[in-house]
Length: 454
Image 1 (cartoon, rainbow, N blue to C red):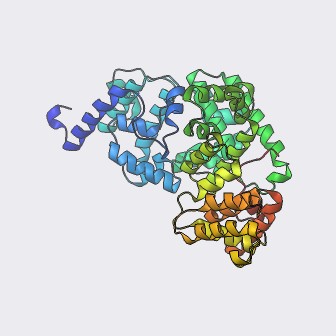
Image 2 (cartoon, rainbow, N blue to C red):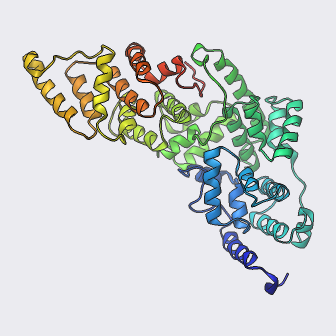
Image 3 (tube, rainbow, N blue to C red):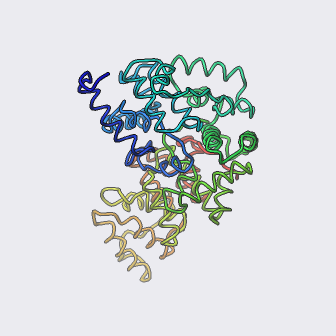
């Protein structure tokens, strides 16, 4: 096709493609999560994402990709499904793009060659084999050994029968295999994440296929053992949307750099050990911090904490020397409007944990000044949650665990996670057991989404 025969849209696609091919890698400033924490990981293991490939090929624009990614995150649909539902790609065009993506990720096809072949197939409306011919490139054969379904079946995580059925559904609907396995409760999200990481590292040449299969089998054995523990009785495997994996959580908080993250992930899979244990070996992170990070992952799953709040919690722990409960409580209410300390104090009173005199005048002299300061803090209309918590603790009026549990509950009440009466009951129980989120999981108000080991 000559230059004069190009339509305006096709010319625009070609111009974008020429810019995209120059980079040869992922999109600058565009990521699959709002925080962009997967970018370094994707680059380090050489994994090409579908959106990057389509943009570099000129098939979708930067602006459209941002819009599609937003819908991708909000609805939990795979990007390919969003693009076909929007009418921007046909099912056959998506299949071609996915096949090119697989060849690139299997290191059978250079990125720039894949971009060129995909553009020809899309722009000239020809099958993939014809596009390879027109690009004067020999079409490589697909490697079955590195496909997700093959890894899962050969590590005995998925039966061959379930794999065949899922493949049929995937071909019919365009949904990725991993989504189908999770939606059918054949595979937990955590095992799927492990399998996808292993697949990428095998493709990269950073992990042997045998080690990957052994690691997946070991991960399944660990999961079965953890499911038998009483603390995991309420666990419900589900498809999680956008929650950072453990290593990515530490990476986003600046605790791990990109190379340490990759080293930990490779160590985890090569030795068949939990990711948290590998992070501890690579970075020296304590077991307590690993457990706290898993707790915050569960809060992210339940949408009772944001990634920015997670970062604030880590700042509180590492830079302000606060306990996890203290850092979590203050990070939770940091963005609250008004003064959350009022609700915090009311919760403590209604749970009969805090008993105060009616006024400073009727209080013992040692307590009068504390009550005066407390009244001043409660009268203002800006955040005094942390100040009031520290005041009550230092005066010996409540324990630290009770104060920070009450402050955390004020945030959960603003999110309408629990009714007030249930929050009071949770605070009473947490005053004895220590973690208000764990109590709420026991009440059924929050979901157990992560397996705990104690």
